[in-house]
Length: 332
Image 1: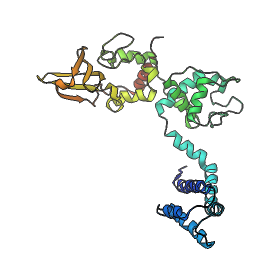
Image 2: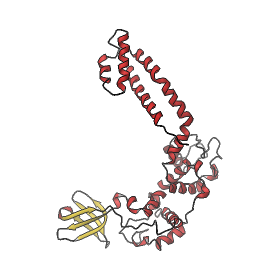
Image 3: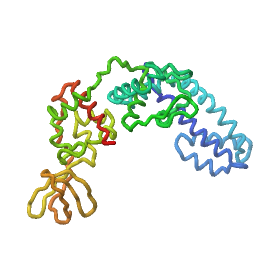
């Protein structure tokens, strides 16, 4: 069902003006007429203050009492505010669900579904409705009002209940929240499960990732170390990095190109930079420190040297490779 909250927001903005006006009305004693005149200069809001000024003229006083202001404001806008409350009470859940769906990516939802089945379904059930008073699929909670609340409960548990704390890393936490928020409209049966074993074979073979990336102390240093990538990046971020490396590249991972005064060209992965110097690892894996004052040219490259696997790997292979990367949590 399509739903737009634009008309309601227009009314709500008027309600906000009402709140500001009532705050003015809370000032002890009368409100000076010059304050009303000043407010009249503001577009739209001034209309109300102009009308309030007329109230003052009606009782023959240049000063408007706060009680008269309050009565007029409530009679003018309160019915519309009540209409907004009714509309949001009837359509709010559907609207929130529709808007919320756009906040989460398919990759994170699918990853979260796997974590839910492994970690949560034993108590909550596959459909999330086995705990009394809680139905995760329909969005019925006891203590959750926001994603932060949900993350907090998953991380800390609920003292005095059977809900234990879970030690999930940020990508796992992002996945479980994404899945719970989309359980109602998500069919787990459509999830293509990734196989980390096959993904490892792709990493070392077809993908040729090991030729640039370092892993657990082994391999080159010309590209970012992936030893802990599964604890640092979400499933969606990793998938986007494989499909569109340039678009998903973080600024800290951008390479640089420098030309010295004698014409020597140096390119490499930037490790550190300040106002006067830059340190990098060049394409020969040598640590280089350069004084910017000695450079003829210096540029940060915004195009990734990593190839896109969008057309090189099948959908299943991409899923397998992401599964393997997510399994890289570092040495414990």
